[in-house]
Length: 100
Image (cartoon, rainbow, N blue to C red):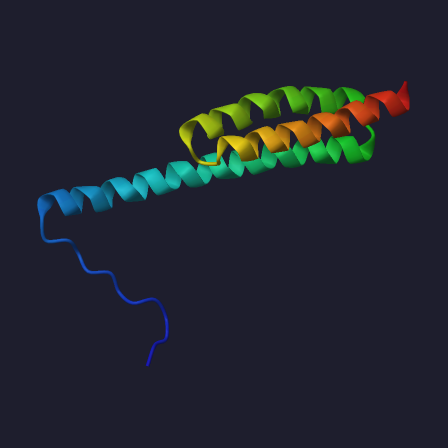
């Protein structure tokens, strides 16, 4: 006996079939945006840990736009986006003050 996921049934109504098709595309788009968000945050953290001030500032500028875009679409909550931006901004500020 296979203990995997149960097989999904195909919807009978046309509207249900359409919704199933749309869900596949929406899931792919959301996954891509979620990955882009996490990658941009990770790039800033790596630059801060490396102590590269200019690279960190450039990555932070890109990250802000990505985070705002993803939060506006509802992929992540706006408070999470604000929290991530705030924490990375504080790390960047500490880096700039340490090098100055």
